[in-house]
Image 1 (cartoon, rainbow, N blue to C red):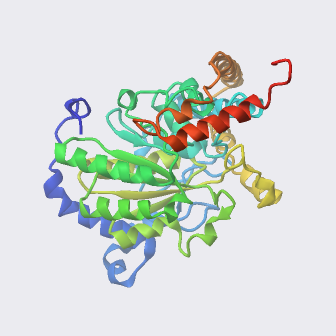
Image 2 (image 1 turned 180 degrees about the horizontal axis):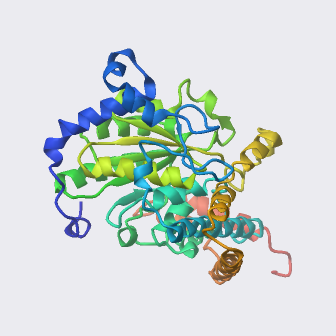
Length: 417
C-alpha cells in the first residue's frame, strides 16, 4: 500500500470485532439460503427464501427486479437498496448503457477497419457492468478484466484511453489511482489475486472502503480465483467477487466447466454467494450495493454471479457461429438489458421521446469523437515489443528482432513502396 492510496481513507468501522460476529452470521445465512443444506436451513430458512426467491418468469435463485418486459417486481431482501432511486437516476442508468454500447460498437468497427489490433466486446453485458459500477463509492477500488468498458465509463476513464491500449500505442492509458480503476488485466483470473491482496491492505489500514474484482465464468475455473477465495475468506477481506457469467468461455459453455451454479461455490469457502439477473440493471445495482455494504462493515467477501449473455464474439478474433446457434442468441436478445429499462421508463412515464432523441444524438457524437481520436493516434511501433524484455538485452531477442525486421521488409515492393 502506498501513502497516496491510503491517505484519503477514513477509519473502518470496528472491522476486527465484526469479522468474528456479524460477518460469520451473515456468511452462514446467505450460504444456507443459496444451497439449502440441512445443517443450517432450520435457523435461516426465512432469510434464505427471501434471498433466492425467483421473480415472475425468472429462474430459481435469480434475483430480479425488472422483468424482460420492463415490469418492476418486488424483492423483500433487495428492494431497499433501490427504494429511493429517482426517475432522473433511472434515466442516468439508461444513458450509461446506451453510450457504453455505442462506444463498444464503434470500437468493434474500428478493429474491423484495421485501426485496432483487437477488441473484446461487452455487447449484452451493459446492465451487469453499469449496475455494479454505479453501486461503487469513489474510494472503492476496481480490478477489471479486459472487457469492463462499462465499469470504466462509470469510473470516469475516457474511452479513447481504452482504445489506445488496443491500438498498441500506450501501456494502459490511465493512472489507476486517479480513478481507483486498475489497468485492464489480460491474464485470465490473476486480477482476483490483486484485488484480494489490495483488500487485505485496506482492512489493515482500517479504511472504510471496499474492493471489487471482475471476472468471467471461464476465469472461475482458474486456480488464481480459487486461491483468491481462500485468502479473502480466511483474512475476511473487504472484497466483492463479481463474476459475469456470459455463458461462454470463448467456445466452452459454462455447463462444461461446473456441475453447480457458480455462485454456490462461495459456500465451500465460507462466504455468501448470490445469483442476479445480469440483464437487469436495477437488480445488479441493488445486489452489488448489498455486497459492498457487507465488505465495508467488516463482514468479508461476497461472490456475485451476474447471469447474462455475451451477444457478440469473445473478441474480434473469434467466430461464435462455429460453436453456438442463432436461436440461442435470439432468446437472449428478448432479454436485452437496454430494451428492458426503456420499456420500464416508458411505462412509468419517466422518459419521453425528446429524451431518447437527445440521447441518440449524444450517442452518435460519442461515436464520432472516439473514431476521430483513434484515427488521430500514431501508428504503433512494431519493434517496441522487443525493447523491454530484458534490462541488458539478449542475443535471442536480437535474433527475433532481426527476423521480424526482415519479415516487415518483405512487404515492400522493388520500388520501395
